[in-house]
Image (cartoon, rainbow, N blue to C red; front, top):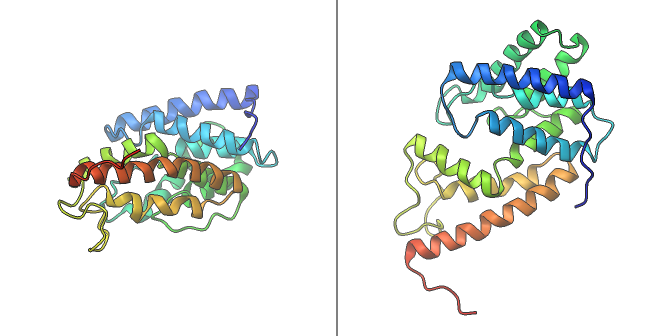
Amino acid sequence: MQATTLLLSPELDAWRTRLQDTAAAALAEGGPDGAHDLNHFDRVWRNAQALLAHYPEADALVVLAACYLHDLVNVPKNDARRSIASRLSAELAAETLAGLGFPREKLAAVGHAIEAHSFSAGVTATTLEARIVQDADRLDGLGAVGLARMFYTAGRMGCALAHGSDPLAQDRPLDDKAYSLDHIEAKLARLPGMMQTAAGRALGEARLALLTDFRAAFAAEWSGTPPCAT
């Protein structure tokens, strides 16, 4: 898929610096999380830029703000409050942006994009900006970086790498709360088909291919299966 890079306007560039500083301050208060750090926000914004190049009618400032503030309230994956984290983030983002002098007429759109980005919340993205932010965030769960984030998060939750005798869950139900490798098939493999934009689906399918290949290679090593002859 070919796409031109979105050129940053001086306004967007200035807001990005302010939003990076705001996000960094929030992260400092919340404690370290290598899967949801400032680098994650930067990557989500870069993903969004790639998508915005295909949808120039979208409001890039709304997308930018949502990309950097979507995880202001970061609740662990195994926390009972996980499903409301995006709503809490949206509420805090509205207060924060108002204090920064962000255009008031855009606050509701930013809030919706933040609330709808979450897989756990199950909120339907009803605007193009929200669809772009949702896709951009989910793209960071795929590919090489997504794979590293998966194992990092699973380690923090105390998950095993994989099931001892059935890593591909051929004779058991998938259980990604117990086995990290299961998360690829249980959730990540579904993400490309759930993308809200055609550009997001294309990027998602390309990144999923790496995870699919990795899963097969991991299972072969884990189980001691000889590699296929070439």
